[in-house]
Image 1 (cartoon, one colour):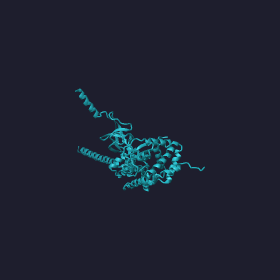
Image 2: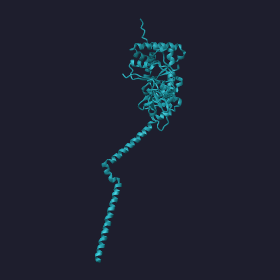
Image 3: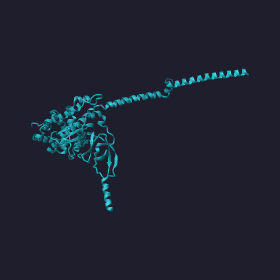
Length: 130
Length: 298
């Protein structure tokens, strides 16, 4: 009887990540980006967010993340985003600087999706300072 | 006795009259004082002494400055981005509008191209250069270096082309280096840029209709340049000579470049799918000649 109770307790612990801790709030830096289902550039998108959107970075012993990815929460979605897309300071976004011009582009949902995907697929680099 | 009462009555009435006169005089003074309080001019000197009028003046100025700033902010919301920002946006916009044709949204292994390219740039002394590489899953567009945001250069490269030629990481990096020199020489912006871009960049369309033909023209020109126009012989000659100059001090890179051009020359000659490559980048055969040392008659 005790063993059964112990088993049910273990299964409960496995499905509810109670040790999740918000590390901090960061801001999205590319124009558009995706919150991914898993920590892979090609993984499905949970939601699309735009530049300067606040993102809660979560730490949990139950979620293993590779060094270049962060486990995050945006609204009700919990997923993954590349760390290089996050900044501690609110960035100066083009959407914010030129809101009327940006609105006039009338981007449809597919274009918003692709704009986010584009940043996932870019292989970025910068040569060192001399 | 009667006389005494008459005198007393006269005295009382006299004192009452004088009291009434006195009272009426003091009441007048108070009204005047009240009037003086209401009259701003009468306390102007006091206010000046207290600095109240100065602070009122300052507040007036602050309000007017704030109003002007607010107006400028409102106007700034109707600005076109700057020229550099428009270039970066146009590149993203072109890539998004042609996402299906270019086929860049696909899963690919980590080739490590970015590290290899970074290494080559640093070896040649190109520091603080930001770049992005986008691998395309198409054979219709092979390569290109496009303006990005924040001073970045966006390189596009065809995966089927890389695979067909079986290019190594170093060969890909040298291939991208050629695109870097073309970009830095300004050939792309010169071919794609429009008068409208120069005229409208950074200006305001406040109380006007936004003119999106600016972006439409740019995106159209991107396609024309990358798919059809390409580069001239003169531009190719200058690029090849620049590669020669920079790579001479690194013989291993120079040899890779020479071999790469040979590979491309043989490949595009025999492969019908890439026959247009020579039109866009004339021509690997000529490039090899330009690189080869002059043959001297014995």
